[in-house]
Every structure is written in structure tokens, then in C-alpha cells.
Image (cartoon, rainbow, N blue to C red):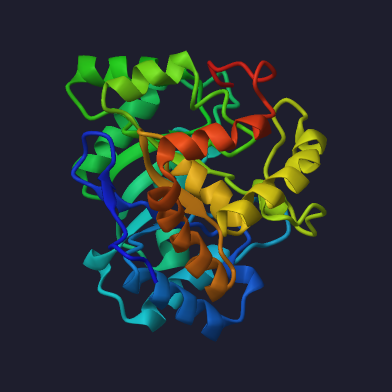
Length: 320
């Protein structure tokens, strides 16, 4: 148990307030016993977690994925009122067409049982044939229709986020409020760099993701599941830092995972850290990371983990 309530932070300038920790659904709930998942989610909510990432990760031609479908059943089994939590839905630029994001959102609602998304996060920008103006216009229409409340992006460059915000301001509509960014002991160059510092200084928020590098930073150096991309091709170097992280964790009376999660909580613009727990004990440990920050102090913790910053000078702070 924590010694203080799980804090909440405003997402950008929106009306949404997210818990300092959020739970993700990429290959999580589909790796759990259903009853265990219900127990875990109930515990997380009792501790103050209120934001859930429920992206649809089943792509045409790929093996089916049901973690988002399971999440919907899990939430119904918890009995949690819809207004007691925030749901964040992923939308993919690859599938953006003449009907906009509407079909994707409709499919997400079908699979999860949602009737609206509190937050939508646009996936990586991998197309050069989509006008940013069209994205802003479509998301504005979905907002007016009551289907979404706020939106953000996943691993976009600072320049493209500035462009989205400028277009939204010209149209008199809400622009992106948050960027989901890879942020960890090892991957810091983008969120800690000058281009994003300018955005954060204007009230823009971050959601830290991939904080354990697929479990590697928690000590599981040979993951047996699919994990995120490896910008800068530094994963081997990250694995090499694990003994040092483990030693530091022992000195601090914590676990490596707690050190990794605690670090992300020290970033002033980080509204919420996304974790992908699959066991109740992992949720308890992740929540315990807040006590580690309080005990050690944010400035001291950042100094202690400085040697594990692997992508410094390797990845462009501007972002992809």
C-alpha cells in the first residue's frame, strides 16, 4: 500500500485528470487468467488508477489479438461505473481513409463495449500522404459528436506536434494534449531534449511508455514475447546496464522495476506512466515506486540513474 493517495495530473489543458500510473493492454490481459485480471484491475482502481490504454492491436492479415476485448469484459466484471475511469483508445494513421477515424473508433467500441473514448492516441506517423489538417478536422468532428473528449499522439516528432497545434489554433478547436513517448532509464533523449521541452513548457503533457523495455529493465533480459521497436538499435546496450540497475535497486531497498518506474515519475511533464502489469504483485510494486520517489527525492534519483542513459547522442531529440 502507498503512504499517500495515487496523485492525478491534468492532461494538457483538457478537463481530464489521469492517475500517475495507468494500465496498458498490449499483450497483457490476453496473457492472464481472467479472474486474476479482474482482481488485479480492481486492486489498481482501489489504489487510485483511473486510466486504461485499450488499443485495438488486431491487424488484418495478422494473428488475432483479443486483449482489448478481454479488457471490456474485465471492466464489466469489476462493476466499475463508466464515469469512474478514463479509457484511452489507439487510432492508426495507416487505416485513416475517406471516412476518417470513424470506422476504427466504431470497431474499438464494438470490441470493448465503450460508447465513447476519453482519450484517443494517434499511432506513429508512417505515411506522407495524409494531410495533418484532415486529421485535426476529423478529430474535431469526433469531439463535437461526443465520441472522444481529448486526443494525443504516439511517438511523433516535436515539429509535427507543433504543426498539429498550429492548425488546431487556426481552426479554433482543441489540438493534441499529450504525447505517448518511449521514456525509461535507457531512452531519454527525446522527452528530455530541448524540442519537447518547448512543448512541455506550453502546457503539453507526456505519457511515459515502454518504461521497462519489455521487462528487460526489470531484470528479464531475454523476453519471450513481442516488445516495442528499438530506435537507435540500442537494446543490446540496454541489456548490459541491467546488473548496474539491479545493484542500485538493492542499495535503495527497491526492485529494478520500481527504480525504472520511479524514474519516469520524476519528469515534470509526465501526466501518467503506462505500465503493462500481468500480475497483482506487479501492480503493487509499480505503485510502490511512488514511495521510492518520495523517499529518495526526484533530483537525487535522476542523478543516480544517469549512467544508464543509453540513447544519449544516439537518438535525435526531435523525435521520429
